[in-house]
Image 1 (tube, rainbow, N blue to C red):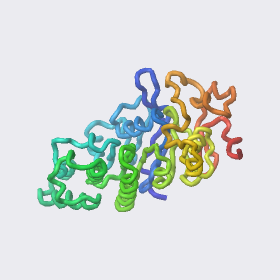
Image 2 (image 1 turned 45 degrees about the vertical axis):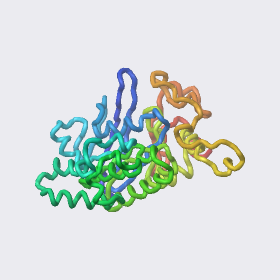
Image 3 (image 1 turned 90 degrees about the horizontal axis):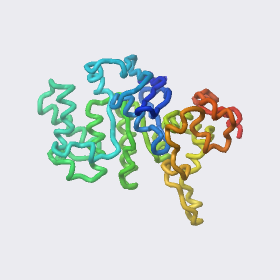
Image 4 (image 1 turned 120 degrees about the horizontal axis):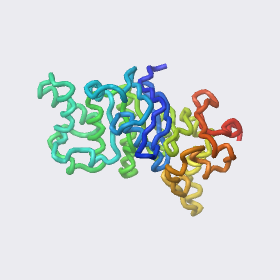
Length: 323
């Protein structure tokens, strides 16, 4: 088994009186990809930003190779930044319009490897541009001169400049044309294999998550409701919400019959998520669940193992394993 790099334990994030994340716990190993899925508003981006301390956490711990990122001082956290990088959803908005591509890629090298000469730094920049499918001549151009897919390649190049040990991808292909999405996904896979980087991949696109991930986390209204190995989750989901998500995957047979297809997890239930302040106690999914019972309104279920590498937060998990 590879080394555990990231240990998230009972992580909670509050926005005022509302709990956006509630007792989220999981591990991430070196070279592993964890897919994170759930509807819009379920807390996926909040989790990603809380891990990197881009937003404050209310409680819990985020242990990075034995160091708690939530309690360490600013100088210590800054030193860890070279190993903790993020690729954002909007590729153009994540790039400084006043900086050339070369300046953007060179900035982390100036900060974390100041001993490099300008020639060495330019060689590293040119090499990374070619690794992500761009040319070295593009280093002197500005972000507005590139397409969305090229800007995302630049964002990935910037994140990988220091060969980080953890890469968090927050919907990195959702704003791109379908024809470009596969190229970006394959690029991320190639870079991960080359640098043995751990990856937390957030997406609405369940097909992309299935292609990339070793394990999958399912989140609903700030709580993890199921964690399983990829093949196990897609073949035999247990939590009613996970089943609903997977049932929303487009079916070409239904499309030919003229039945509208649901595109992804954004529209999985065909209705809006309940407000956070309406689910303060009990199971948050109970009002949409066909298996709900009175106990579901009294207490929130905890994640419990039902099989090897498979944990579910549902009061009726034992029955649902066989249904």
